[in-house]
Image (cartoon, rainbow, N blue to C red; front, side, top):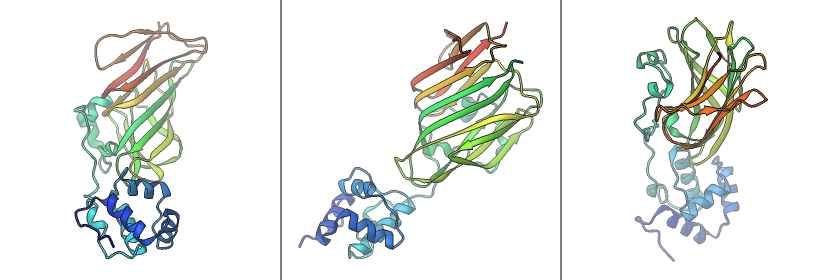
Length: 295
């Protein structure tokens, strides 16, 4: 009978153990579930073929349960899995600071005590669609954002959203609605009106798993007049779409697109529906936006 080598890659050892025991993946999954380890067939198949490596405490527990189901000695498989480190954000792949991405001063972030300001690094941005609705009085009535993300680690369960109106005026931005997420801790900087809000997912994500959620900010009391919409990213994003929707009674005379990559500001059309947008594909770290002139 073939022996498991202590130096064998995890996928090779896992496949050998399954073949030796004569179990199908479906049967192994059922046995693991009966012992409290819920793992999808796709994940088991990826582990077996080496397309994905178990990471995180939950995955390590599942491997230990698989050892028991396959009649293996303790640590026969888990010893081949890299032990998870303490959960912390992976370093950002760029040198763009959070303050730069937000267009804020570093001192404004001091009010965000208790919120992991670098936690979003555990998620890769696939798609951003942000839509601002402007009123007939030229004010920013609401900003809705839909995100598609991919988890870069096991156990990621939240996103931190930062929102700030055009500075000044004592405005009170609030999280008005959420979908596929719920609000957690909220921190405010009164001087800049910056709001940092945790958005907690419906369930923890596995490495490589995608998630779609959206949320909307509005205002308690009078909304501010504004002449721009922007979104900053600290890591590459496959797609960023920004859309400004104007009231028919207040359509700007000109709209422009801009980014932090240069001084160029190409003019944008405003359609008959009263909207203007930009779509950036394979966006690099930085700030992207639309600005407009009312008169």
